[in-house]
Image 1: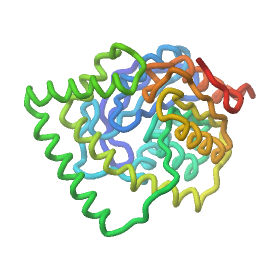
Image 2 (image 1 turned 90 degrees about the vertical axis):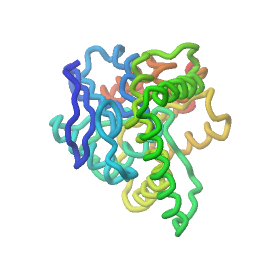
Image 3 (image 1 turned 180 degrees about the horizontal axis):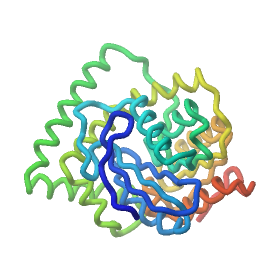
Length: 291
């Protein structure tokens, strides 16, 4: 890996790690508050590929900018990064980052060769925008600032690390948390603040993506929708299937995997990346289940 560092992309400071290898680049995007070390099991299986890991503001040394992130900002950051890389990428997006990946593909299809969505966020019935949204955003922003203050002490950071460990264990089928550095990253005050801010922005980003879907057609890029089979029950499987259909993609239900699929089933993710990026015409069959 090249030396990681914080740089400005699309008007925001973010953390970037890159490893040289065969193009096209594979860009790995974590979900809400998920730091890039969580992808390490997948990175190891893509040992011949150029791999880029992006940490959004607040993670791994980049500061939280003091506001809730918008879908437009996420797309601007991704666009600037791809321009810097010098060409289109294969996007691998986990959870909430799935919203960002889909939005980018609709707005700038020339930047995306294919997508692998990893238990991506989806919600089909959205409440209308209203005055309550202003109050909700203000409350969440206050909570984020308070959390940054509370976790600035040694004791607060220790508590944050313990909570992060419990969350990771709950969202993974593993008995132990690996890599441990992911927990250290999650316990940082800026990271805790960023996680809260991203969660607060979730509904607004869903709404903005819904508007994009109505305005911009899907560019029909090769897409695999990986669904954690041990996560949300039948309703979740149906919602994910609907997402795959919307994106003209293939759904793969990964048995015994939970939401943090990069820890539970890295080989499935790596296989999907290779199938999409190499355009072999061997994408997994619809409804395929991997045990």
